[in-house]
Length: 115
Ligand SMILES: [Zn+2]
View 1 (cartoon, rainbow, N blue to C red):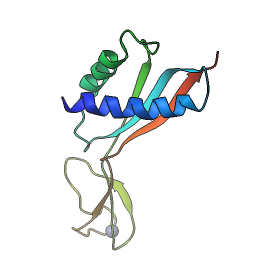
View 2 (cartoon, rainbow, N blue to C red):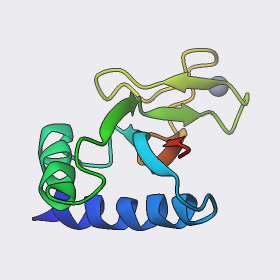
View 3 (cartoon, rainbow, N blue to C red):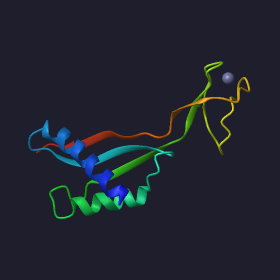
C-alpha cells in the first residue's frame, strides 16, 4: 500500500524531530498534501494508526491540510489556483502556464509534549 510507506517515511521525520527533544512525545503532526500528490487522506490516516498502534505514539493526532493545484504564468508572472483543469492565465489569457504547487507532501509541523 502506497499510503503505508508514506506514513512510514513521515514517521521517520517525526522521529528525527522528536529525537532533538529527549523524552518528548509527539502528540500531533500536521501534513500538507497537494491535490496532485495522489494520496488518499483516509488511507494515510489508517496507515498512521496501524504503524503507531501499541507504541508510545498510539493516539498521535494527524491534521491534513490539502493544498490546491497552483500555476504561474511565465508571461505576466500571475500565480493562480487551477480549477477544473483550466490552466490558462486568468490575467493575460496565455494558454501555457507552469505548475508551481499542488504535488507537495510535507510535514508541516510536529507538536511535542515535553515530559
Ligand atoms: Zn499571464
